[in-house]
Image 1: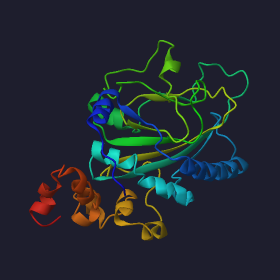
Image 2: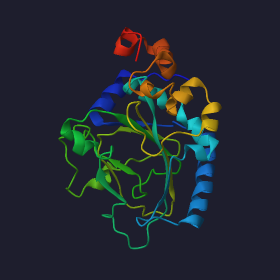
Image 3: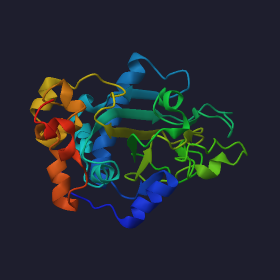
Length: 284
């Protein structure tokens, strides 16, 4: 995996706002290849199940469905930033292809395909407002969302402070992220986000990858296929949730986290993993 340094300004912005926009994260050729794969899966999904009741289509755990998604697993302009914002002890917890066609005629600006929410399932109820930053998602935009009303994600700046509530002043449209194909946005689990209506004639295509600490359960898979793991390098295997044994998720050994020396080579030692009890006592 190629390294991209996280700047001090990017870290400050992410810590303050709860999200970070990366312009031009994917080059045009990668956008086209990813969009081609997305459209193939979308057309097959439409023929099989159609749109869901909210009027869009999605595929959870999309990574095994096409090798172009495997390339995104360790994409150099985004994933190294996530490793620096969390640490080396991470894995992919979700890969999520989402396609939102134009809404039916007459749909209002106040329609939400996804209301304001924080990610993490029951974590907010289990942990309350004191929940920490546990994972970061990156959304890659495959279509032009530079104009309002195209069903782009809406992010509430600063709502990674969990005392901040969802907006209710009717100004939600101004929170919509405007993006070009190939742009990406990183946002963390505590950041409030929503999706308004797609009132354009553009079908919105995007793919989301989530990365969290390895002691978290993945959202949309139990284990990745062995034949997929077999053709991956050690860092990709870590990101796909591979492990030497079950204890490796709680008390990782060196073989469990090849991302640790890789990150240390670039930014220096940034963790205390060598001080974990299993390494201190030489046993787990």
